[in-house]
Length: 187
Image 1 (tube, rainbow, N blue to C red):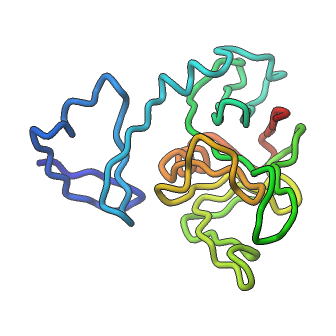
Image 2 (cartoon, rainbow, N blue to C red):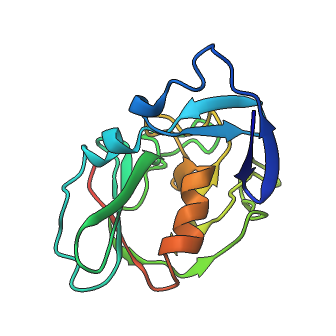
């Protein structure tokens, strides 16, 4: 038994011989409070999908690659600091009857929210979709946390880049600032 701090809440976790304590080789486990389930956040696997170094011009950069469904945080020295699963925009969204790919290019974070951030647009018609730790970078598109299991190895969002909530919280409070460069690679 141990107490974990998840999203500012103390959570009592019972670890049993069923495997929850034997996942050190596959990466840390995150707990989804909505479902009461654990999922593996295999940071080393995500980091292996990106270059370990890039020219950042001396500033921090967030790189999103929709082809391999990964985001990476690069320090001012150009070294990859952390990476995680990313779900970018889909080819087509039935509910809006149009393509909904994430904008491709180089942007800067324009504004940032906290754990209470919500969409003003989705779901239709009133909005209210959870977007904890949102970091808006262009035209209403943001990097943000999404509840389990909506962060998947696919491109199916309305254009935002979905991240696991603990990753978005880390990026929001430990890495990014207004003005941090965001690069979305072409699909």
